[in-house]
Image 1: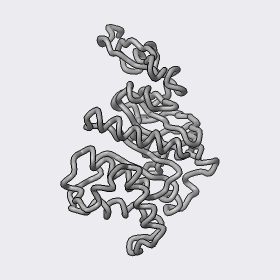
Image 2: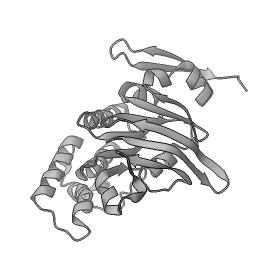
Image 3: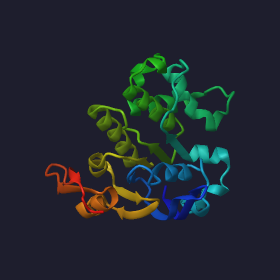
Image 4: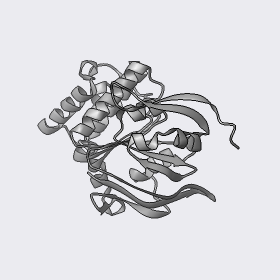
Length: 261
């Protein structure tokens, strides 16, 4: 599903968080939203999921304005994995994933065959089939993250929104999560991720949107966005960028903070 942002602006009181953000993301693409802290990344993701409404501009999915959709229609269209999902209640892993079927069954609906198939498929894709009887509170950070991805997959969404899905994970779990999302995009789901790790972004993403102070500084393929000049402008950090000979993807080595005022 094609996702388009047209002149999105948003403010917190008098402070502008986003200004005239415009981008178009092809169906079945994996897009990373990058930029320093406070650049508007998470705010933009919330607007894409209609958790927040822009002061101006609009978001469209295959040309349909998200604001014109019903809440249940949006829930069937968009799956989200946000930060601080909450794990204080000892639900089983299978119960957590089953929550993803809410858009189809409501609060009191009982899962039928179609729901069971969707739940099992989502758990298999996220690699958590062996954890179904475990309580979510007993899992590691990486295991919990995969369970939350499975819950979103159980919605059978056309678009997946994820806010720093690899934060606080070790390298192996980071790669595992990114492989899941890359595979999901390959099956046709449009995946949009807020990211901090530029090397992961360069390795896995089809497109990048680079924000600074709420504005798009660069948008396009990783090779075009992850340049030494852009990294200096966006982050104020000197870097060496070279293509990885095995992947032909950009790899970044950070140097020192710039002395540029």
